[in-house]
Length: 124
Image (cartoon, rainbow, N blue to C red; front, side, top):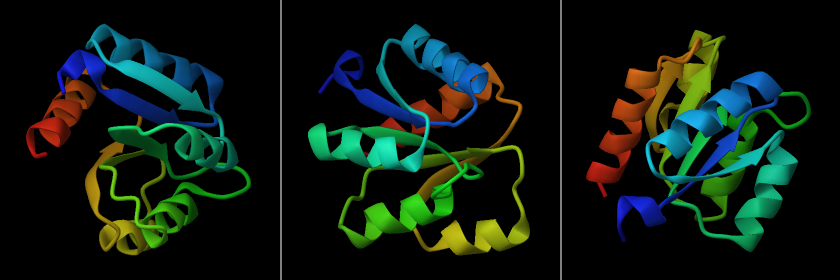
């Protein structure tokens, strides 16, 4: 599969941050789906295969770490890059055993996000 055929799902509750992520991903030549919460993300994963998930941890309702455990418990091993403005030690410990490809702080740096996406696909 070529990079232009790869699909990335951005799960981010902050609209402006999500729009920024989508713009970055699309500028890199990937298709980007978006979800404002874990429940919508679950629906998308039930409908479509994605190649990479960009996951915010702190969201209302089901948090990102709960969503990550949910998909891993169901055998979904899609690479996940966690993006968060609040990377607490407890959260890092919780996600450590859940096959996280990378953890990135906010604010998002375009070059770093591009680098982590390319690394995630290069390791497949």
